[in-house]
Length: 149
Image (cartoon, rainbow, N blue to C red; front, side):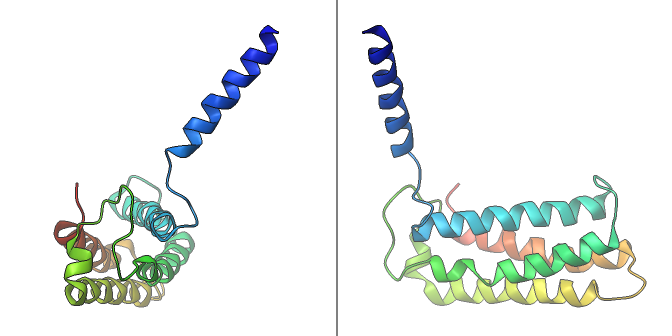
């Protein structure tokens, strides 16, 4: 009898724990996953330029291309009407769509410029600092206007 009660209690705990997260297939879950990938990729690129990680030209080129591709995808997961749930997006995302889209296009332009800069041969990390800073500044500008901290 005790093992049955223990199994039932464990099942109940797991069921309750699963209820607290964001549905990964929801628009919010999709964009959060993309933004997390963008953050991880940009942290690696920035880490290579700041000496936290060893600079690898092939890894930087691949990371730049990945970041550029990712920068074009989260916007489709912002529905026209604010979705329910615990989002870090301010209401302004839905109230000021033109400005939000403008900042999205600026990020896309910055990541595209980073890809172009990373195509130089030979690739020197010092020449990538300014384009990477533009990417980071684009992220920061959007976060300051549209992300609730």
